[in-house]
Image (cartoon, rainbow, N blue to C red; front, side, top):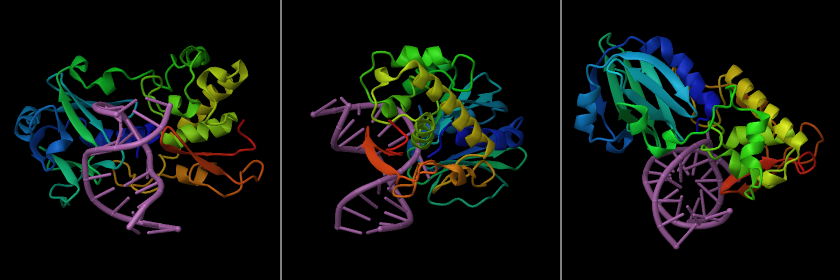
Length: 273
DNA sequence: TAAATCCTGTCA
DNA sequence: TGACAGGATTTA
């Protein structure tokens, strides 16, 4: 579920509540939710650590630990991280509970069980997906020329390329569709077919849509909530995603849905060429 | 580059 | 009952 704006919102809402907290108890209720060790070893390794800071890379949350280690969390489709009071109820979807010396807890809840917590002693030990992330869209190294560099000669469809985290870190299905709409580019165009002008429009659209998503605290369609359990607001500002059959906000043509790379892609057949 | 896979839940 | 869901990896 969560893309860059949602993960960033979780980070911001969690930071004050977990920074400086010492972990005194770890409950692993879903074995598959933790890596790379079995629950007992994972719990033992994490107990006694203090969370020094919380950062984000793409869709990963990074909890920096006092030992120098790193707890990486990927929420995948339905994962939630909730800062809650001690004794907050466990449900059948509660995967991991971190108990703090203060009595507060951090709950990792995940309906579909795709999400993962990964404890590593350094970046280089992290899973391949983390190590191969492309540039952050909000950083200075994400430029029009970088976009040109990764798309030149590519025969894959632009929508699928935008979802490849090795090329750009943080875009998901919603924001990729919204960016393509704003740039006036059809999702099935090949990466290499974009003109210089289209590359510029796409670059600006990606930056804008992610910044607006963060400003509105993310998009809640089904499951997403931030670290305090609060829903986002950007769903009210989506122009194409989830709007099949509804009139385009620009030209009135009904929004179409098609499958690109196995994912639903919403677009305006009139505005996006 | 597409489909299957990991899961659970919801909706038409 | 089948299709689909803010993701990513593995397999064909």
